[in-house]
Image (cartoon, rainbow, N blue to C red; front, side, top):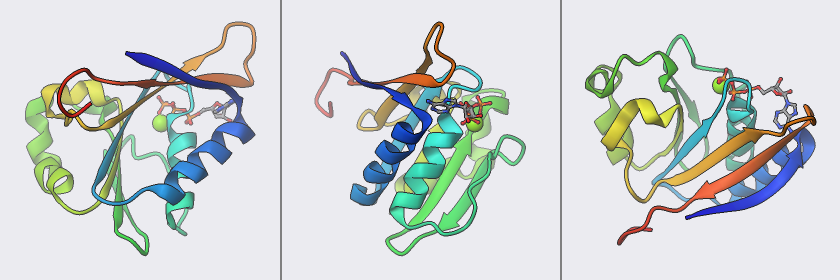
Length: 147
Ligand SMILES: Nc1ncnc2c1ncn2[C@@H]1O[C@H](COP(=O)(O)OP(=O)(O)OP(=O)(O)O)[C@@H](O)[C@H]1O
Ligand SMILES: [Mg+2]
């Protein structure tokens, strides 16, 4: 099941992300899908700011994982774009990240296959045809016990 949360300008998306971040309690995993340039990192930066991260949040495309400290818990920002496959997750400390009492925000979660927990908050950003300044934000709900 998929719900549209809204079609948002960058300012609106950032405001939405900051509010989400303010309400987050660890442990939580947020899976962000969307095309290149859809706004996954922009949304992550807003979520982190709302959660209390004061450092600059930059795209972890090359490092795969960046970790930030915030008063409630660490935040792991993970970009799996360059991951070869789910087997590489062990090299980035995936199990400890996901099992720990932290916030984990994952771009390109499809690369992790079944390693994404069913109770993840699954968000998708979509480009809007003919409107380069807006993005559609959707939430995917998995069916099943944890949905
Ligand atoms: N409504 C909007 N919401 C989010 N970003 C927007 C919006 N309108 C324009 N943008 C621009 O789109 C770009 C989104 O880039 P961002 O790095 O956040 O995307 P990404 O999904 O993380 O890409 P990648 O797949 O390369 O990691 C930014 O340059 C941002 O300024
Ligand atoms: Mg990104």
